[in-house]
Structures are given as structure tokens and as C-alpha cells.
Length: 556
Image (tube, rainbow, N blue to C red; front, side):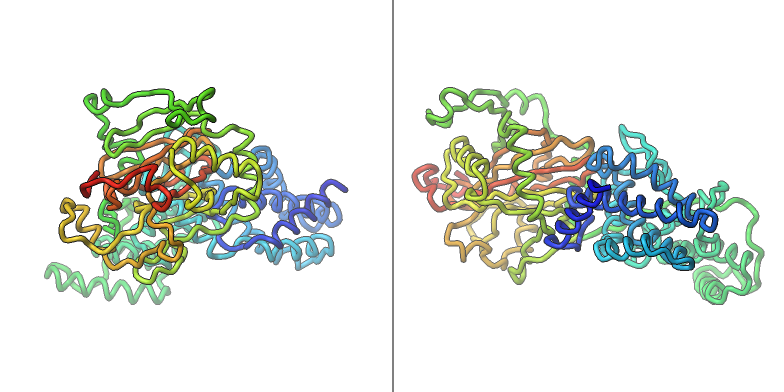
């Protein structure tokens, strides 16, 4: 008992010093919710012992969660690495526990209510629930996951007992609907309806599902099917006013398109409802298809000719004394632009220390608005990050020194070591690490990259206030293995680099002339299964004048 109270006190102190918002964007911080939920289950068990005769329904509910938390706490990061588990945790703590509280309030019990009141202020909010739902849809799109397989816990190469119920699918569809994302609303409302028709029990009614589904289908431009679905709805509930109005409106629209349909009511078909197939709408990202294909391991442009130009070697940092006795194992990942991977760049002990230092500081990662220059959160970057200084711990100072030794570049003008943990469907869509400068009329850029560049030609100099110049190079440490997804991809030239714990990759963002290398536009693919930890060092131009002398041409 004392041990449990000690943990509860620790958890409360941790929550008090950490931001509660955006819990879904970091697996590390979500693990604390696992223990919070376990503590609530324990409190609920005590309440049941006091009033078991009155609370048979609550006891059944608690038994289910008791088994669930035993699995989740045995390996919190592994459990939350499965996106369905992470989403359902958000949903339980955002919705279902509050429904249970209402039930318990009918017969108050001081112990349970007091415990709920203590923890409730730290529960995930509606934004977390929505964020987790959208993450599942992002994974569905990126990795081309079938809704039915997804709902049964089937992911590429993985199968688990993490199932989505009728109500879960309905909630996913409703989240998409409320966001005017009718494509995903249709996918998940159809799946909800399919599972309901198969005999699965649910709280949601068929009328509610058909109501959302019929209008979403209409928004996708499928008027005939919208009419059929609405007719079935009206057949079940003739008094449904919105459905009746929609049906008349839909039929009127269709009658304008084809003169074959009159205004007379036709009974709904008795045949099973057929699922519709729709095309995903285009979005803001021009290289969306290429980027997502690379995330799936498709469209890679590593051919035999290029592979023959890649080598492995021992690297001693140009006779750096710290690397003479133990040189780094350097492996070419790509020839041009040159990207290398270093084996054994971090030890397991160093990784755990970095994660330990970062956890209390993790906050939602931001991006710089290209128009205003202001840092803000964005849906295309879903992770939490922390910044660590060399003075924070000798391990950080040692890692910084190692990066300098390996790269041959000074880190005196580099940014702090950034540590990131990716949450449910965590990703960072294609972006540049360097700041785009006003367009040079003499700069030679091909059509595709020029179009992308022009979108950012008025971007403020993001690093002017630092006085250290642009980001010349990126050194990226992988601090965890990822079971599925999470690759670093370069859509411009078709490369994919997969996370491997303890390794690091390095590339230059700028040519020696100081001009940006627009081929280095890259992305962090959504994490499908697992918890992805990385740390990176952005090395700036100033101080490199004699370490990497300026080239004579724009592409040197």
C-alpha cells in the first residue's frame, strides 16, 4: 500500500511540473497515464468491495480494465507502441472513465470519487483524443491499411488483440466528420456499420451511423448512394426529421442531373448495404504520394550502380586523437548528396541517460511559420522534444564532443542537443533543416524544387538573431529501434533510412558555397508500431570557415 501511495505522490509531482496538453504526441509521457489508469482501477476495486451487491455492472467493467492494465503496465512503451492501444487509452480516459464516474455518483463512495477527482485534472483532454484519432487515420493513409484489418489489430507484419469496437469506429468517423474530413468519416462509419450488422454489440445505434454516413457520402459526391443510405435510415426511423429533409433535398438534386427520377418515395432496398470506394482527396503536400511510398519501403531508388559506389570504412576524424584508438565505423547510405551512418555512435547507457534528462522537459515540438517566423505547433509535426545543454550532465558534453570529433565541425556555434519522442502516428512531414534565403536569379534549381522554393522565398531568416549563420549540417542519433514505420526519407532522390538504436546519420544541408542543397528535403515517417526516440545536433556555418572552406561555385 505504501509503495502504491509513493508512486501516486511521485506521479502527482511529475504532472504538476509538466504540461498536460498534447499528451498523445509523446509515447514517453503517455506511459505515465498507464500507471494513472492502473491506480484508478485499484481504487475502483476497493469501491466494489464496499458496495459489490449494488454495482454488478461496475464490477464487470473493472474486471475488463484490470486485465487490460496488467498487460499495459508490463511493457508501457511496447503497449503504447501499437497505435490502436494508444488511441483507446486516450478514449478511455477522456470519455469512458467519466461515464463510469457518473454511474458511481448514483451511489457515492468517498474513496473512489476522491481518487477520481485527484486524477481527473490530469486526464487527456478532447484535443488529445482528437489527436490520437487523427493519428490512426494518418497511419491508415500512409501505410495503406484496410479499415477492417486495422479494427482487428492487424498491421503489416503484426497481429495483436488491440481491437476497435463498433463504438470505437463510430468515434473515429465522428472525429473525421467534425473536422470536415468526409473521406475518413465514410471509411470508419462504413466499418462501424459493418461490425454492427455482423452482430457485434454497441452503444451507438444504426440510425446514428447511417445519419453520419449518408451525409458524408453526399459530401464525397456520391449522390445516388447517399439517397440509398438515407432511405434506409428513414425506413428504420420514419420520424427522423433531418433524414427526411435530406432525402427530399438529395432526390431533388439528382432529379436535376437525370430526368429519370420522380419525387415518389421508393422503399429502401432489402439487400445488404454495400461499402463504397472513394479516392482520397489531394492535400497541401506536393510530394505526398512519393513520401508515403518511401515510408512503406516502396519507390526506393537504390539501384545496383549506386550501391556499387557505397562503402564502409573506419573513420578517425582526420587523425583526431580521441578516435585514433577507437575509430568510428562509417557506412555510406547515399552517394549524392552524401549521407553516412555511424555504427555504435551512442551506448545504451548514454541513451538511457539522455532520455532520463529529457523526459521532464518534453514539450510539443514546434515549427517556424514561413510567413511570420513565429514558432507554432502543426499537424505535420507530431512529437515532443526537449533541449539539453552540455552543462546538464557529463553525458551530454561527451556526446557533443563526439559529434565534433566525428564530423570535424565545431559545435561551439551549433544548437543545443534536441531530443524527440514520437507519439501515436508521430511524424514530421517533408521539410528542410536549413532556412531558405531570397531567391538568387543565377541559382540553378530544377522545376519541382523551384516550385517548392518559391513557396518559401519570403521566409524570414530564422537564424539571424543567433548570429551563427544557417544550418550547415545535421547529425541525427537514433536512440530506439522501431518495430514498424518511422523511417527518415528523402523524397527528392528516393532514399529511406531506417532507425537502428545506437547509430547516427549525418549529411550537409548546404553546399560549400553556403547555398542550400534542396535535395535534402526530408521527412520522419509516421511511427506505425513502437516508440521512436531520436536526438539531433544542428551544426551552423559560423566557425567552420577553416574546417569546411567555402567552394568556388554554387554547388561545391
